Amino acid sequence: MSVDSLTPFDSQASSALFVDEEEIEFENRETENLHVTHFIDSVGGLSREKFSTHPKLLTFTSTALKYVSQNAANSSHKDRYTAIGLKHNLCFKMVKCNSALVKTTLFSYGFQQCSARNSKFNLLWTSSQLKAHTLRSLAHWQRVNHFPRSFEMTRKDRLYGNIARARQQFGDAFNFIPEFYVTPKELVKFAHVCDQRTDYKRAFIMKPVASSRGNGIFIASTPTDIPLKSEMIISKYISNPYLINGHKFDLRIYVLVTSFHPLTAYIYNEGLSRFASQLYSNSPVTFSQPLAHLTNYSLNKLSDKFIRNERAEDEDSGHKWTLGALLRKLRSMGVDIRLLMVRIEDIILKTLLSVQGRIAAASRNLLMHSRCCFELFGFDVLIDSDLTFSSTHI
Image 1: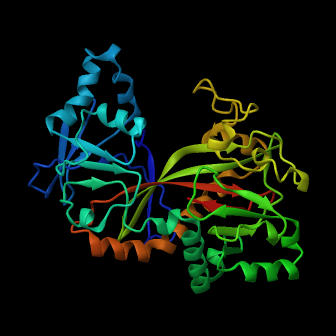
Image 2 (image 1 turned 120 degrees about the vertical axis):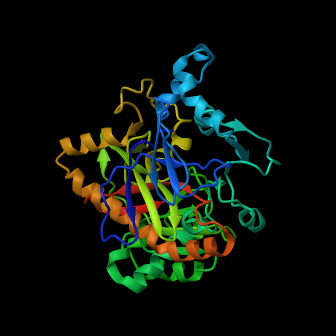
Image 3 (image 1 turned 90 degrees about the vertical axis):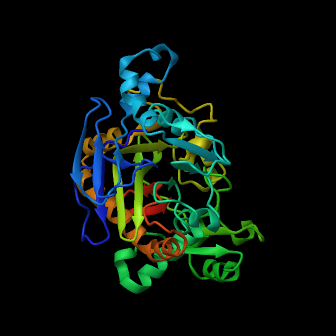
């Protein structure tokens, strides 16, 4: 997990700031002096100090991952990294998840994994929202990887509803999501729209409000296809996506949020591009072929047509590219990629602003210390043939 090159912006800026930042912070439990910041040079073993109200900072780099294996057990290079966590007795615990990548990254810096019942952790990594009493009990030196009420962004109905409210208040500046309906409560309203408008009679896409990895998504053309009891979000299907080599794709952008009051976020300078494994066609007969229309890796990797990238050096091979490789390809096709990324950053910032009030209020109510939470979000952005953004999910 490389987080050594992040681009920050905050809610008080009128546009994204292009500033490099190389620190991810974890505080030593034993640190009492919060007026001095220690910047730990994990490779050279050196440290430098500057007066600040921030706690100790630890820089993570992907280089450390090379020294985790048993073959490097006696490596002096490995000791330069693991000594940091061992020296400060840093530990983490995982609840309702078992991410090998997260564990390996932390092990490479000398973190120890503790029991899920241990309350003296430095970092808690979980796949679910934490209960109120757990958040209120966090000490100032502890970190958890979720904000309270972050489902305001990750649930599709909440995300679209928050952006729609911002659009009502601020106008077309927030006009970057399609018109949508939430069933079953808006099923009658949607059926009436289908009767009145031809643009919905061709096709619309349905997604469960709380699912991920492409589960439960399908394309339909009549309200009779809509499940009556399931909570779904419906929007007009974009039939003219931008294609590369005949395949539909989307962009995965990683955003780290360290605070919602004030809003502080970092956009990672690399990401992914995920391709549908079948050639795209907007013919209605293909609507039952999800691998031509959905780009989710979890679905496409099961296809016999899916091409895996076997070498990390080949960034534009197979059905999953790096973001950098995609941007280079788009530039070769005449796309202004700088303008494209500025517009994507603009959408990310406005999305965060649309939920800031609710998450900040929950954080102020539940957290004794404002710096205890952080969260890593994946923004999935789909662009159409006119290079406008037709869909955003998180």
